[in-house]
Length: 267
Ligand SMILES: Nc1ncnc2c1ncn2[C@@H]1O[C@H](COP(=O)(O)OP(=O)(O)O)[C@@H](O)[C@H]1O
Ligand SMILES: [Mg+2]
Image 1 (tube, rainbow, N blue to C red):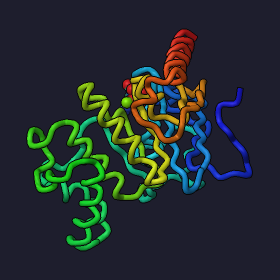
Image 2: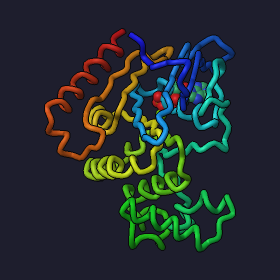
Image 3: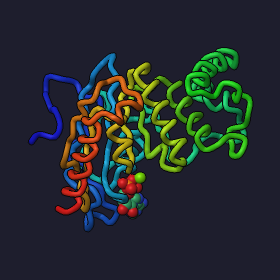
């Protein structure tokens, strides 16, 4: 079975080929012969979820895509070009990454500040995002706990990353530290807004139900050394809300992903 559509006549937004990662000069390989190829679907968002055991290299892969780390071997292309930090790639981490000495509004508008946009224009654009993620009324608070809850801080991080209008949004277990109710609310928020941005989202999670709810495509990594071994097409309607979780097809897909994870873990 072919894991990735890999048509030479079509553009890929993300192309990792033959990646290998070793931290001891090639004695041990954490990642080996890994390909990850995501076709470009212009003017259309796509939601790709990566599943794999802890320590298999998911965060490492996101760092490759963000240009924060290069693999020991292999190549990484973003929109057909070698990855560089100034490309339109944003990252949301599990740990709150907002600047606590700045307000919500200033945090969200940060990308525009680096571009030299005036404070007034920054605030106006940032405010749109603040509203979109449900933080209207909190914009002048400092982005820190406990002024804002964990869920609210992740809303800040999401708003900030979306303001940069990224072509690729990398999300590394972004809801992993949240309680279950907040987590479900954040899943709802994400499903309701991400289509507007036509970004390619690469999302890492341990939560299979979350993966199926959010994804168009799920890719599963095997461990030691890591590479992708399974692809599951999530053939649920593109526009989702929580009712889909009552759909028998949703349940069926959750079981299919679970079985596949177990199969991969046992090989
Ligand atoms: N600087 C480093 N030196 C040695 N090993 C590292 C280093 N950074 C990461 N690793 C190892 O690489 C593996 C993959 O890490 P990571 O990408 O964080 O995995 P995941 O996000 O899937 O949990 C882990 O086993 C980790 O211990
Ligand atoms: Mg990780």
